[in-house]
Length: 63
Length: 478
Image (cartoon, rainbow over all chains, first blue to last red; front, side, top):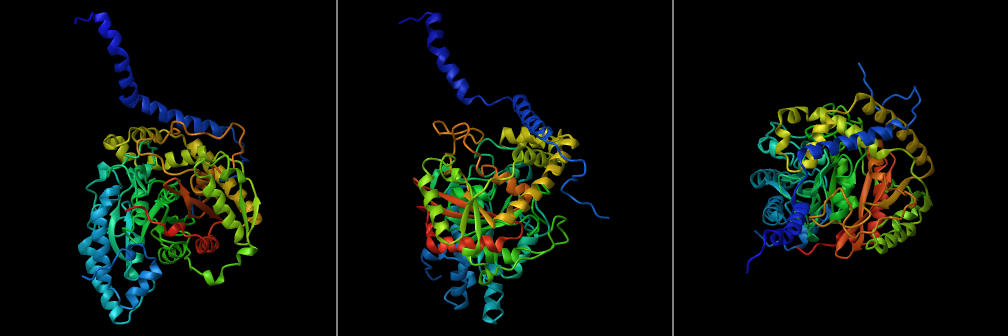
């Protein structure tokens, strides 16, 4: 039995798309962008916090 | 060699010590039995980095000579143990669970190993971990040189991390105790998932010298063991001032159950929502039964709220800034691309971009968090909550999103203590993990959190809980 190219595409494309969705890892550039976005979200959350001028960081330096 | 039977592999430190002192068993026999078991069964759980049979036998023979001459060094003498493979052991690989460091060898021992050696404990092996203790973030359980940590209770499930090997090895009776580490959750999570008692000490109580640094101000080393009492005995040995650790608290720890305050005099803070709406439905009966046991000990339970701060963002910022500086050579050389987990690779690369103003803001908020928790601990002596809200996840489940079909708390559900892990780590608080029941075929646990240096309070609560329950004695189907 012969299939037209249109018929073959209709059968194969959803399966190929499904495989692509479940197995293709995110590109490294996308992962880096996501990592930067997470750090930016943290920074934004910290920026919303008011801290009095006289509060020092929780570490000490001693000579 | 005499047949030791199976019970020996799940014995507590005092039980093993009694047999050694009575010469029913020699340290050499014990070392051989445990190292062989670690070798034969550790691979079932991807729990082992390296076994140390020859070194263990050499050390055990010296212990036997000491015992024969009456040179007794305490309850840990002759007891085999494992360490997370971020602790330096001279002359052998210390891989940090990561391919770029697979051949790394140090010429000295970590302080914790030196301390345990000085009392005659016998190092049986190095145990698997998530690569670089998962600092950059990781999406899959397979983020390790050793493959995914498999849970001894169900090997289709994750052991938890990043101290995956220590938790699995103790749960499966491969070592009587192990030393792991926590920056944010890496003792509490695998202990909860594997049903093992474990202790995250106060920051600075146990020397970090010789341990891979992930975050100078967040890293702590602590024991996984068969009981709260065992954790107390181990902490007494490994705690103490160390001038080689800039973060050392400069003090030791003495396990003093005989001087513990009566539990009826204690106030324990909790959030009811943690045991109901915020808990996984499969775990709620176990959590609620465990809370009832805690109530039975006579302590007063009071509902409290955690101080309100952006714990997650603060911890993420501090961790990123510090790990970025620590691993800058790895990242700028490009060797970071050899890591197993793409999310970890990206997280480490991004960590070089944390502005100093953000790091300093987080560290200033951290001082306010310390003050707020100090105030909270004038009202209560400890906090109790689930170690994790549910049992271990499936191996294939991505770790950065909820499992399909899992119910999430309704919008508007009070937060409870959902941020206790980042909060406790930011403030440097100790936490004791206590197996407390089962959710299906998987264990769940409580965590009891206290003020800095209140380990004896936590251990007394734990010892009482474990006198009334036997969850810590349950064994996976090995």
